[in-house]
Length: 235
Image (tube, rainbow, N blue to C red; front, side, top):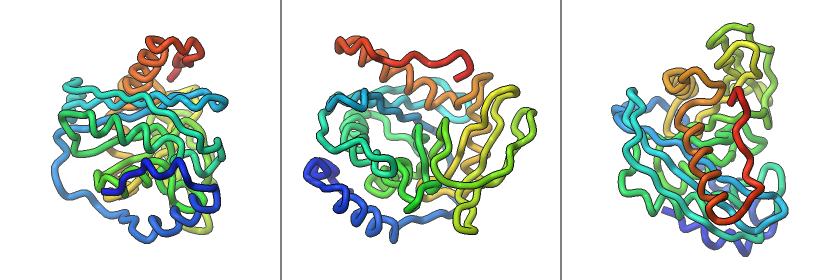
């Protein structure tokens, strides 16, 4: 298990080189062990601030009953750079992970998995350093071309980057933008989509990351950071 605390001293060039090394270890394959617990993870921060708030919420699966939570507050000086956000967020999330009493069988992160220029979104990065199977469920597209899915529940459209499928755009709710699902590590694309479908509870985003979003905003407000973003009506 890699200790990400050293990311603080990386330059952007160091970070890209590290992504290229970690990329060699990515395993996108069917998860054969049973999923009895699942967790959602989120990190909240103001891009102009060095303070980050991380939270993880663990649920039973498939019932999605909350059984455990953990949070962490961390500081970083790593710059806000698209494609390298994991180097800001992963250390805080790793602290929350270490604070978690019940480790889940699968972790869903609010961000990208392999739908990333170097296949190293935060879900993939976190899965690699913890060895936990991970899925990225993002609210916006970073990489990957797709045809707009039909405006009906659970309509899907595959996402491709350089002729490789990297994920699926899923219409989780009618009259809402799709969400962008990509496997992180140790799970297949198809399984990733099926798990996220099972975690939709009437909102645009899946329940694990929706509850993690509430949790990080709660600790952010409690910490006196009044800039916490509240979820939208359709999130």
